[in-house]
Image 1 (spheres, rainbow, N blue to C red):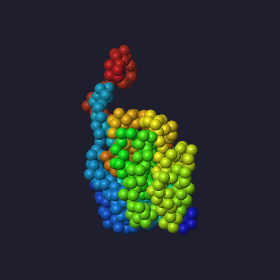
Image 2 (cartoon, one colour):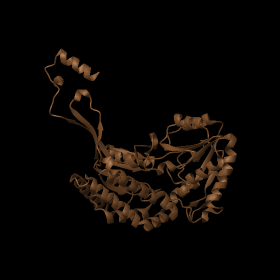
Image 3 (cartoon, rainbow, N blue to C red):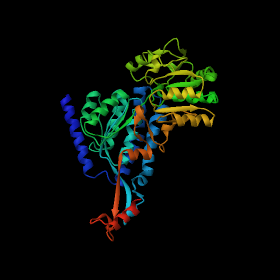
Image 4 (cartoon, one colour):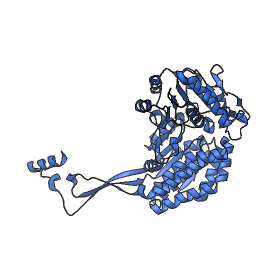
Length: 463
């Protein structure tokens, strides 16, 4: 298919979805509930193929695929089905006395035609989780999965095309050409998950149409460990969160800020936990994933410096695997601290106290996530009060993304807007403020001719 033909096909698809939304087909609760059930059933029936695709793209085991992608997707869809009725209801608000007699309420309405652009690191969950929100809110949607995860993209296209008409939900596979073609069109919402560089281009293009955007990005998410922390448990939970999906997680702990008094002991606990969770020969562990492609493998391999390496560091270019790696005595001038690592390399930086750790966090762009391991409530609250970040955990890592009852999103350079559960419904909706004015009585004070008496009444009502 030529580039011109691709552009024409995308134009026709966008036009079809615009007409379908305009028909009003997506407005009824019964319709939305049926589509959510279709999506749920499609995921369940294609589960084996999804697992196979995730293994091909990222080396994910079936257990990890279900834990981090399939199960979380099903949970999001189930949540939207369960709460759809309450989310769609109008919410009544107080009416000022000056508006007597009237009823005031806020009513959610779908935005319209949305585009969801997803990354390669969680190529299933990060497509279908926002899609579940978009469906519940009554929109049409085009999914654009990453070209770096082609097997999952193919399964998504098969799953969606078998369950929905393309004028309602569709998948466009491909790379930069397809992205560029899609972004020439006006959408009622652009939902982008990925890196900052591409996000800037997406945002620049969307501005031409004044299209609203949700950006789910990333950054260097810190993990603070103070002297009161339970180090063995902290190490267990840090190792899980950091090396899940080979560290290719936007909310993985990027580096540790550890108080000097416990830093060396913490490192030994981390090494013990890596061995316990992944074994002595990690590169041959069938349940350990791989780096997405050669480009990222080379980038990550170059960040492992021998003068800071204390554990791991072995790389296999044939399988694109890198051992869980710990670097010690890292400084902010080292290459590994320049950008988000997005791989199985964990840097440890010593700090003299909590105040120094907080100062380091505040000196850099707001991260998507932050983690604090401490038994001190005072220290926990101090970190929460003084550090800005998207979300996080106290005495754990990454699990805050796994609940549909809390919003997920970044702040500053780590993103704008959020989703999941009710917040996801809100993100894909516009809330209209409606005043239903009654006709049995009409206050005369707003109409001319004005008088001193009317001025006093207005002053009484609006003070």
